[in-house]
Image (cartoon, rainbow, N blue to C red; front, side):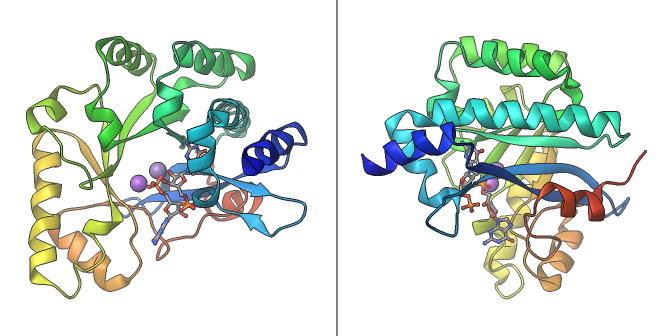
Length: 253
Ligand code: G
Ligand code: G
Ligand code: MN
Ligand code: NA
């Protein structure tokens, strides 16, 4: 309850910030998207990572206000990047509680309109377990967003229990392979087999694969052989503030 109150105060005092982590296309060598990750610059602590407050925010419902802040900030940033000639997407993590709000899509569209953000510069990340539970109303709204150019990704894929025939029918452009499937691929033939099968499955369904949690060149080597070209992870780049991100990855078209 105390953390919940602190979160609300933190929102009022504008203590949150976004970091960005690139998704690198090894064919072009550049970033195709930046995942926005929220951090809390708490006045009495060091930077607080989302793992320490997103679950509480989710449970208490504060995530709705925090999510609004994130959506607003991302749309503002996307519009600014577009004006500077930088066309990579910015990905937003969407939690269960947020997507369950009846006016979630209205609020997202409001943020887009407020900043005149190009929809094609936005990406929504929805975890596998949440994606499998989406109701028809949500599927319709996601489909409409995609028609407007918004990219939809399944996050943390491989951690849940996907209904594979359902996966094929979801209004989704890409799938992010969870880092747990990548961790041991450089040392374990079994891990390699599993990762390769999951990647092949997703690609076979016509969806783009992004591999998360890539931490070493040895993992990259295996992933290249498997047929992956889009990577996100500490080996490529850590999440960082906007200025540092743009200095390294903000190539203009
Ligand atoms: O950065 P870290 O590994 O601590 O992130 C932990 C979790 O917090 C991840 O699952 C990530 O998806 C989630 N997260 C990060 N930023 C946001 C955000 O802006 N909104 C939501 N809902 N979750 C986020
Ligand atoms: O659940 P989600 O995939 O949104 O989580 C993203 C989180 O993963 C971010 O908080 C980010 O800091 C973290 N992350 C990004 N790259 C790596 C990596 O290579 N290894 C590990 N362990 N975590 C990573
Ligand atoms: Mn994510
Ligand atoms: Na993920």
